[in-house]
Length: 436
Image (cartoon, rainbow, N blue to C red; front, side, top):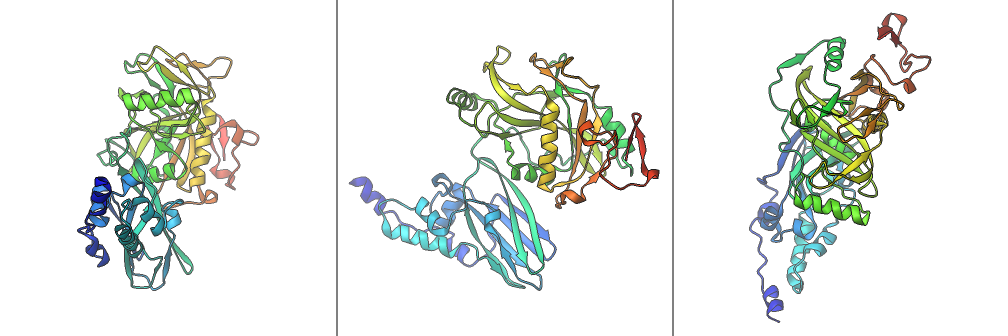
């Protein structure tokens, strides 16, 4: 009885609700700005502390993550906001209020519902108008990515946002990791110097001591993290947790119960003496199966864009091992080219890739003479590493440019890549194989 009375007597008077109603600029901790043509966007993701200041309730802990938007339409045409692109499963204001209301206090619950309705963002933004308000989304852990999409007569405005959010210890320390000086800048116009530099990079990852080969380095990403990370997440790639007791426990439970674990950690592999800067995975129905990659930031840039080198493979099972203190490891599909090609097609489908090609990273290792990594798992490969240049601006697949370097045999006709109508004068020789 005392608990019921105590809950019922709680005063609902969030300190900043009037500020929201006046649609003033709010200073949230997790805020980003974008200017796209004549549209100016200010976007923030609220945590529990901020949502309690605005709504009087720690909404995230109750299952609702408020996303605040301010949209300035400086165009001469109206635009409609598509909240479904922010979260396909977003809550209506009344549904969100139902999730975060205060039990046994109908009067306060009605006030919360009224506030959430009043402060949800309107969908139509008229010419010269500025609107602000909330979309009530499903909470994410570690990283929250979404697209703000506006549609007007004959035009669209679309841009991605990525925020670090609480919930898990992700296997990346800094979302601005690539904002530093690059000691080697490659600015050649035809890509020949880039081809040379990428071919000279080490063939494979290694163990910590650097005395044993790991998996092949079969991936090159060119672009800033803030440009390509949204495409990864939008295509279903999740960040991974650090390896610590809690994450190992969840992985063990998923192993025994055959369940999925979206943020399952990956073990460390090494490039030039350091472990990966970023690891991501595309989980499937259970812990045994996933595609995952690791990326390392190099000291090189191409036309001002940082160059990342990576390793991608497909997990197809789990085995016990004494090589890790957590006594388990994933078994990878020995055909690592399949995972590499899967990733290329996945990223082309994201419309984030401007240019793609392949460069040789090592000599081919066929299935009858495979490479063996330091976990004693066989690996066979054609020795090529995929090269993808990303851009914040979306590019249809039909407009993606090609590096005219080496290509996997399955993409050739009579030994020649014939995807573009190039004149004979533009046919070049690469490793005795004509590439058009």
